Image (cartoon, rainbow, N blue to C red; front, side, top):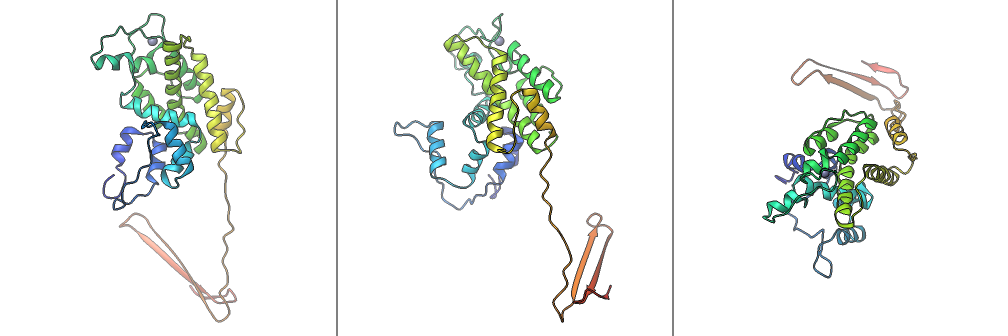
Length: 284
Ligand SMILES: [Zn+2]
């Protein structure tokens, strides 16, 4: 924050565009005293659950609306996870080694057990490629193996056919990474084989949950391809309002003016018209 406004450059470094748009609508006053939005539980630990309970039960305003906007627990978890991923705070084997702990890195996602790095796990492994390639082809995005940051930026910069489709395109990368990570942990700690099909299924289900929460009128089909078709073709709701000229009350005249400018400074023009209470022209 700077001069009572959000620092756009910092937000862009950390967050997707749709989240930045929401955050920038949150008003704050630098003169107001700080107040805690996230309190520890009785044990002294900070958990997502304590924040959720606190915000849901007691608070109003900006942060609550941000949480409500993302609706489901899974979506909120994926956002927190994405923040950690972009800051390289995910505990991959590569990160553990940076702490000086000697370990043999054997990635659980591929048969030849390559070294587990963030780029490998989330973008270049066999499983990650299968998942990204599936979602890219269904969303009309060309699939090229990239580093994870480049991959995320490509998705976040893609403009949808309408506002709902854009929300889907911007939520999807976070959910994909979150599901890859959950599957990786299940493979490492519970010996459950990592499967691209399972990740795709989970992401598709979470998208349905999010859109059911955010857009209750939208009926999404079960199949992912059908979901994409519905979201791509969703027409914006058009609100119309009748605009008409009203006569002034008896004994009064009404002056209407309009003008425009082509550039500033630039050529400009304007006009006015005066009518009486019968609607008859008094002067142009
Ligand atoms: Zn791997």
